[in-house]
Image 1 (tube, rainbow, N blue to C red):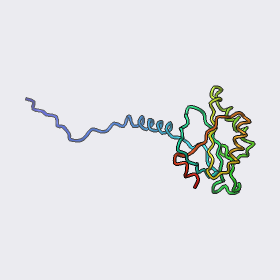
Image 2 (image 1 turned 180 degrees about the vertical axis):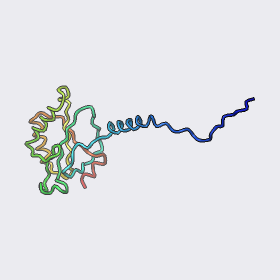
Image 3 (image 1 turned 60 degrees about the horizontal axis):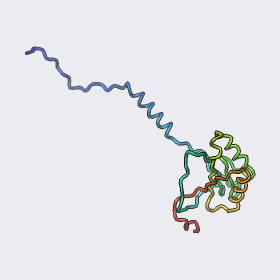
Image 4 (image 1 turned 120 degrees about the horizontal axis):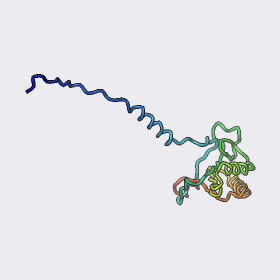
Length: 159
């Protein structure tokens, strides 16, 4: 039998904050990797037509986007007719060849044949501008073309 007993205090031990910086840096790294930045600022109205039989593009292959539609609010000085947007600027039809060549130059050589040109055309745009874009793409031998649409009933495009 011992005469002396150590008194136990009822207080909780202090929380160790030694691993807190590690946790903060792991969260920072996760959000840096998982966050997707918007690539282009749309300067056109882009309400896409809908279709019922669509396929998702393979993300492994490189994709370049060509936008077409009427200038949106704030860009009315460019007119009311449908315009072409390449990256972050309005362009003429004859600038498409230089755009495709620059997109190919930015790719590794083995990926060049897999480059897909995706057309994001407003549903109210004139079909003549789409024909002009396709003619320019034929001149530069960019024959892998995709039309971006939304999912839905195709008959709603007629309204």
